[in-house]
Length: 159
Image (tube, rainbow, N blue to C red):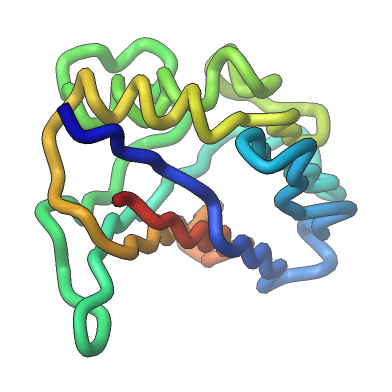
């Protein structure tokens, strides 16, 4: 049986409205040759955030960027309770154990994802759906009051 791996290859966090929020940090850290994790902290300046939505797209790179099954926009405030959509439940399940995004709105604190490890993602992806080897991009736009406030783009390699 072939052993497959998932690893972070890059992360880019961009604040689109620095009066609303700004990234304090956004990085991938390799603890050793086999353990990598990502950490993100977004400082919110206009709190409480009573409404936000997320546009999330999962794409595969192959001679350019191609759509790969998933692109959706959903209510971020309802994400905690919305177990009806398996894709939203999956995304929230990835963040919940490693972040302070563990309740519905309002958010009156900074958003933190702390040490989300690649091995955890690999385990969760294997449970959710099979996907072919390759390079992937998870792109998310965080929207409040109809305005894109932040973008987080994570590059992954699976092989």
